[in-house]
Image 1 (cartoon, rainbow, N blue to C red):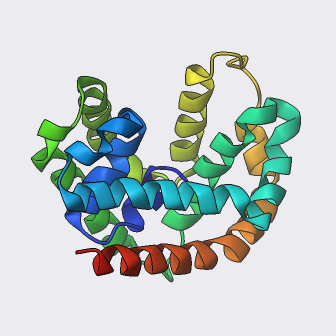
Image 2: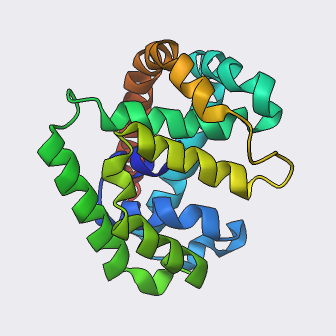
Length: 197
């Protein structure tokens, strides 16, 4: 899953920090953080593992696989954030805006835990309000181009965004089959983490 999904499926400020931190740390360093941040790291990994094994995600990957092969999962993650951001059964538009503002504040308040590359990314994320703007086609286009630029072995002009637009309805169906299951799974993981407190 991508940034909006991980922030939405965080059950505390510490979990938000851990979820964003996970991609920037070595596994052996995870235990050097406070328990609530460790919980966020655990939640991030549980979300990714569940997502990778879900049948609806396997179907969604077929949209991008002919273009980007093994990178298809990264583009599905981005696509799912679009549907989350537009899912008004989860939050109203104003609530999504409040959510984005809160996440940026939590991350900035806990910047001491993050390496410099993340801090630079956070500055851009907040300035351009990535989390809220995932609901726009232009926001997803921007994110898709970011993934293409980071992918070492992909041509930067692959028409991934066109594939997203052409298959948006099908991808949304995959989202509706998948996301309630992920929410239930994350809630279960959070309950187990609370038992450890």
